[in-house]
Length: 295
Image (tube, rainbow, N blue to C red; front, side):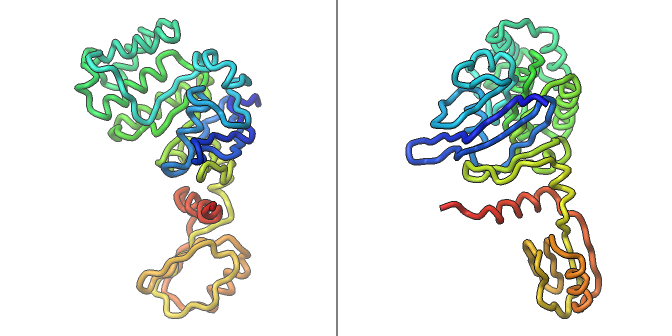
């Protein structure tokens, strides 16, 4: 598969502050790629580098096989970008903002824009300063999708949207993906990433923690073990990733030998037992704990 996004040892510093630190990413054509991490991890900085909006300190970044420093305009023509928070010129109507976005790409998108206005229940004649945060999000969705881009880059796309509009958004995105678009998605909503993305990268303090398929991470050998009504706990086996106790209940994330686990359970005294697969949130926290805090 062809790489749509590729970075190698990508680094961006803001004076003494590190935004991105030797980041290696590879996003293949046709992927729905989740890029996750907390505030300040470097997600938005990475996106701005890919869009050619800020300069690289060192390393390499390519989109469509083109260097982001040398081919910024060509790359931007082929991308649909939705920022986490969009600001618009006051006094403009929704249709003016959308038309301006289309003109910047020298593309007539009126038919598709009208279809998206109807789909997302957006009044094109409203002034942007009168819109709620959710409706401003809808404007940025239309601007990002109306020209049917090859690559769609989304930064926290569903924040501010009600559940009905969130579903409509994901349906629209799935249609674009089925038509051949590649999606690069930054999100705090890990359940969305787990449901819609094929591959993910977890970033912490500008550094890559892990990159793998959602399936591989979700189907890891880690299991959530919960004991109810605990009366006695022997020494924990090797492979306990994290643990917590509340009243008479004890729970732990386990990735180790099944023989060691059964020996532990045989020696413990408890009333009930539950073994489940961990959610993406738990795996995310585990990878973060494993990465540690960089000094």
